[in-house]
Length: 180
Image (cartoon, rainbow, N blue to C red):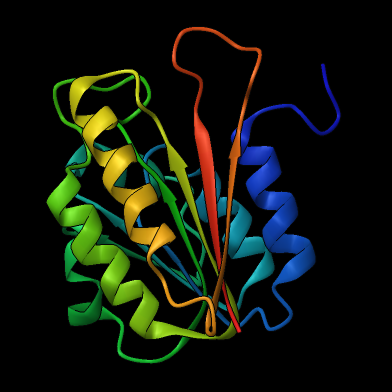
């Protein structure tokens, strides 16, 4: 196993651990199996975790932590539930691992969520976006997310795009947005 060039989640957790100074409020925009929520819960005082699938919410309730608020709704409605500044937002796009591959994140709702996240993000905050382009919606979503990030004002945001160069079968990519 590689130490740095491992899985996207490990790289994302490393970035958040080491480059987000204030760890007060975080959002897991895509709860899924809860690994990012667990990580955020261990590092932030409050975590808001979103998912549209009851299965994901129910599974996480079995191990729910006191500082995690589960929200059964689309991440596109973040501003309906979170009104204060946040220090970190994590997206792990695609479908629920082990769940239906027919239910995926969607380009339009992801872009709405990213716009809301940019508005909520505090100075020094970071947004991480794990992209999975192994399916049609994922290809479209990845392209649009990269375009969104590319067009952020460089006076206020730094953007980095990580991707594997020697892996096959549509490996995931990672976009990191840091607010000045």
